[in-house]
Image (cartoon, rainbow, N blue to C red; front, side, top):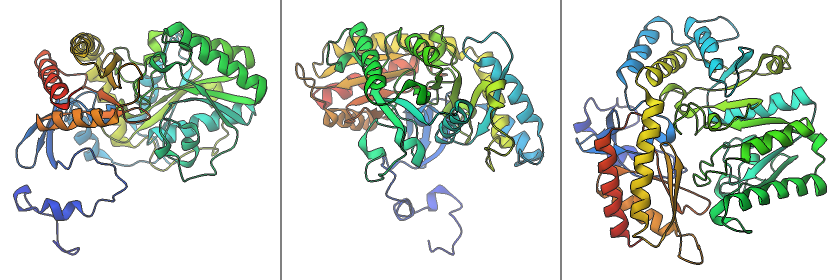
Amino acid sequence: MTETETPPTSTASADWDALRRGVAPVWARYTDLVVERGEGSWLVTADGERYLDYTCGIAVTNTGHAHPRVVAAIAEQAARVIHAQQNVVHHPAGLLLHQRLPRRFPNAADDERGLFLSNSGAEAIEAAVKLAKVATRRPAAVAFRGGFHGRTHGTMTLTTSAVKYRGHYEPLLPGVYHVPFPYPLRNPTGRDPEAALAFSLAQLDELFATTVYPEDVACIVVEPILGEGGYVVPPDGFLPALRAVADRHGILLVVDEVQTGFGRTGRFFATDWTPVRPDIVVMGKGIASGLPLSGILAPRELLAAWAPGAHGGTYGGNAVACAAALATLDVIDAEGLLANAARQGERLLDALRALAAEHPHVAEVRGRGLMIGLELADPGTLAPRADLARSILAEALARHLLLLTAGTWGQVVRVIAPLVTTDDEVDVAVETIRQALAAAGA
C-alpha cells in the first residue's frame, strides 16, 4: 500500500508486516498481534485468534473491551457533539461528571470537592503539582523511588521506576527529591513490612534534615501501590504516616491513583483501603474505559487557588470521553465490579501463591484486588530475573494469555484482569500461568 492509497477495506486484504513498519520503534512492544475487536476479557485478532487479555490495556479497560453500555454512551454522544471546548461552552456529559466524580473522593463525607479534567495521567500529575505549588507558594516536591508518574518533562522528574523513563533527558526539573518506597521484599533493614515502613519514614526525616526544608515542600506525590515499579503493596500504615507528616509541615498529599483507581484494587480508589483523606487525587487510565481522559479531584477551596486561565487544555473534558466516563461509573456500580474485583483478586492471589510454592524463582506473589504481581528472583540472593519474567510472558502468549512485566529490572510479571472477569477466565489464567512457569523453568 502506497502512502496515497486508502486503508484496506477488510483485514484479509491487509499486509500487516508492511503496515507495522510505519509504527515508531520507540514503542517497546510486548506482541505484534493485530487486534480486530475486543469482547469483555478477550481480544480477537485479525485472523480470528482469541486471547485472554490480562493486561487490560495497562489497567485501562476495567469494564472490559467494548462494554455495551459504554459503547452506547459513546455512540449517542458522538451523534450529538464530539468536541465542545471547556473554555467556550459547557456540555451535559461534562457537567454531570463534575457532579458525580467528586462524590468518590476518598474518605470525604462532604461535597466540597471539585474536579479538573485533562487527557492523560501525566497531564493530571502536572496539574496536581502546579496546583500544589501555586496554592502553597512553595517550590519543591517529594516523590518515592520506584514510582511512575508519567513521561512528560515534568513528570519524568518524579518518575524513578526505571532509568529508561528519564535517562538521557537531563537536566530535569530542579526541586524534586526522592525517598525509598516501603518495599518489604527488598528493604535493606529486613523484609518485615513494619521494618520497611520505618526505613522509608526515617529516610524522609533524613531528607528534611539534610537536603530540603519541609517548609519548602509543596507536595508529597505517592502511588498507594507502586505500578510500573513492580506492583508493590506498602504496609497499611504508610499512607496514614504520610498524612501525618504532611499535616505536620503544611505539605499537600497528592495520591496518584492513575493505575490503582476505578476499582482496580477492589475499592473505588486504593486510598479507600485506608482512613486517609488526600489533598489531591490524580485519576486516569480506567476513568473512561479506554477513551483519553484524566483529572484531579481536590477541595474547591484548593482548586480556587488557580486564577482563571492559570491552567487548561484544548481537549480536557472532551464530550465523548465524559460520556464514556459516566457510563463507566454506571457499569461499575450496576454490575458490582468492586466486589467482583475483590473476589476474583483473592482467587487469583490464593492460586498464584500456591503455584509459587512449587517454583523457587517466584520470590513473592503480591497484590490487592485485580492488581497482582509475581516477582522473579534468584533464591537467596534476590538477584532480579527479568529473563524469567520475559520467558513467562512468551510462554503465556503462546497459550493465548496476555500479561505484562513491571519492576525496575523488568523482573515482575503483572496480572491485570478486567473487573468483569469471570470464574472460568480466572481458572484459565491460573492454569496457563502454571504451564508458563513450568515451561520457563522458574
